[in-house]
Length: 263
View 1 (tube, rainbow, N blue to C red):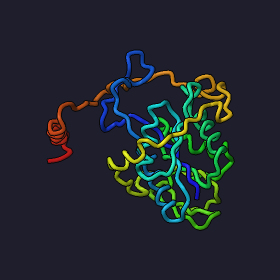
View 2: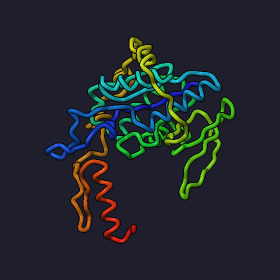
View 3: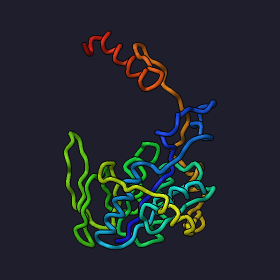
């Protein structure tokens, strides 16, 4: 089975204190630590497990600048067979539809049976997987937390729905699936694996390679434009606890006792 997994380089929220820049147009990015999007990591692990069970290969692809190559190599060190970087100045400022359009062009260049994305990989909107499937006219399932290959034409998926229930579906291949966290336990990536893929050539495909007109993507092609970032104002009765973890815990306990929450 030929599997393509879409991955994204994002700020690591566990390593960064996210702040908004002065003009409110973006977050401060100069000193941020980046890593692969968490949901995408589960998608790559699932793809590797499918390949190991039924054969085939796993390709990871990322839309971004040259820095995005590091997450492609990281996922190759994890076990993916190949990596592709989709990079062009024309892609800068693309909205979810633009990213999906770029990925569609790459999918159509290959012969993939299955495309996986993270359930949330695009600023929390969770839209690229569904848009990509619609553009390809392929079946789609979101929030997938179990997956079983039935045969070379069908895959069985479980998806998380309201009330903690699990919905089971059989879907024809090829298809697009958005993977939920918790579907597996992503494997550890060691130094040996990183060194092994350090010198492997990563193909870079631009707008011309993909047959994409620059006007259809990027800021010029975006139908959704970000107009502002802001921190919500402190509301009446709200209090932000500051200090070390131990200090915050101590303050929280005092507040709960004062409000009658605990005795």
